[in-house]
Image (cartoon, rainbow, N blue to C red; front, side, top):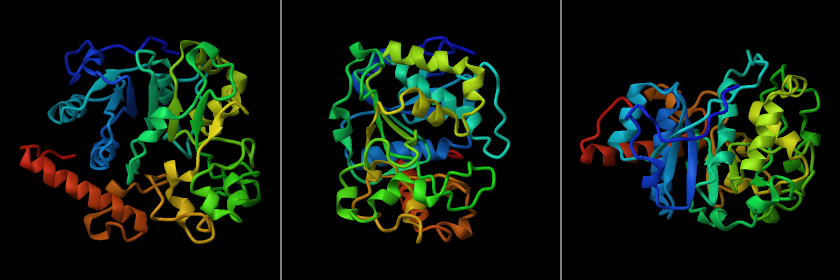
Amino acid sequence: MTSRHFEEGKTGENTKSDEAITSKKVWVSLVTNLDYLPGFLTLEHSLRSVNSAYPLVALYTDALPPAGHAALRSRGIPTLRGDHLVPSVPKSYEQDPRFHETWSKLSAFSLTQFDRIVQLDSDMLVRRNMDELMELALDPPGEEGAGDRVFAASYACVCNPLGKPHYPSDWIRENCAFTSQHDAPDRAQTEGAPLGAGLAMPNSGLLVINPSRAAYELILKELVEATSTAAYEFGDQSLIGYTFRGRWAPLPYVYNALKTLRWKGVHDQIWRDERVKNVHYIMVPKPWDEPDGERGQADETHKWWWDANDERKRLEKTRGIEDEF
């Protein structure tokens, strides 16, 4: 397991050093390959479109090729080089290969040069300002990962709406935290389901964090426990769900609105288009993987992404930025 600290890239390819990031509160998203780079760039655009007061920082690993660095540099997006995290005993995710990369997201807990990190997956689209997450009450770093509010997140949906056979047998509608909110949809817009609802697993697509070296060490310790990581079906979110079980703050779905929640018969009872602040494009295909002639036909929320992406590219063209992303 690699456990180096985050540091400024030494290759000269990073757009800005951490010293150039003046804000003590930042959005962060992991970038490890070119496949997700269009998602990251449109996420960054969407944050600026809603007038967020805070920058999005690209956390990259050594796997990001030069073309990715060039794309970030041309757009003036600040970057930090980060830890590549993997369990001491590799786990096979043949059905969900994306989980091979997601462990490294947890490096955000180590960024103690910042007072507040909100980690975002790059397959997200911000539709309404959510800067209030930068002020959300959490345990101070002095609690060393032992408090009751180590981080904040929305719940994972455990309904398995696509009926994937390799998902755990207890991932059913009756065990989903969101199901418990169907009778109070107005409250669901502003409150998360109670702590411990359903299977009590957070979705790690959005994590609100007060960085703490001690909390990070707890995560690193868990990564070397082969008997633990072997049982983690959902990578990083399984790890933090079990490591900090019962010691995190549930957020309402609007901050991590999994696109599947909107589907009829999943959790459309609580979904409100006008209240959603951040859409999460879980599953495949991602919007940017759709052929041009089929853009947004499979899912209404994909149209929202394409509108934002088209706007981003129009604005970039006025700045002389025209690349494959």
